[in-house]
Image 1 (cartoon, rainbow, N blue to C red):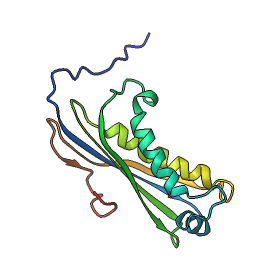
Image 2 (spheres, rainbow, N blue to C red; image 1 turned 60 degrees about the vertical axis):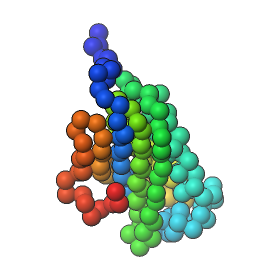
Image 3 (cartoon, rainbow, N blue to C red; image 1 turned 90 degrees about the vertical axis):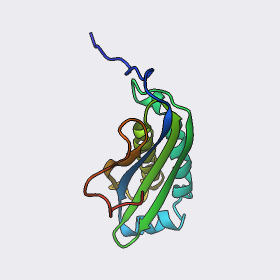
Image 4 (cartoon, helix red, strand yellow; image 1 turned 30 degrees about the horizontal axis):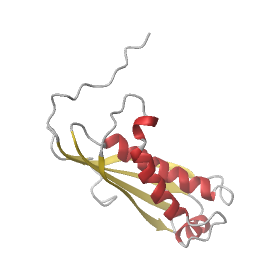
Length: 157
């Protein structure tokens, strides 16, 4: 039998917390162009993925077992399309004022945003791949500010 349980955060201070996550969707340059100019047959993938990221952040405790439900104060996603490289860079930022951080919410948001673009473009490019999902930065709570080492120039904070 599993000994899984939520971490008790009852004694932690309520502080402002923020997390930033990043992912890259790789595709054909023509697919990236269609994503960037909203000309996919299914419509504007970036606008849809932006909404999907926010929805995913809000529903993270329903998706990730043992994740605390948090009152989010902000969730958003930004996208950079590089047609020549055939890449869509996705950055999600999530904020709260709570007893625990929002790393899982940011990681879930960026992953679901990438999957949403994949879903909307798979009819023109089924070989797309999602890469390098990672936490870029987090701040708040006892540990203060943390930034992933060696990633300062890869994505915006």
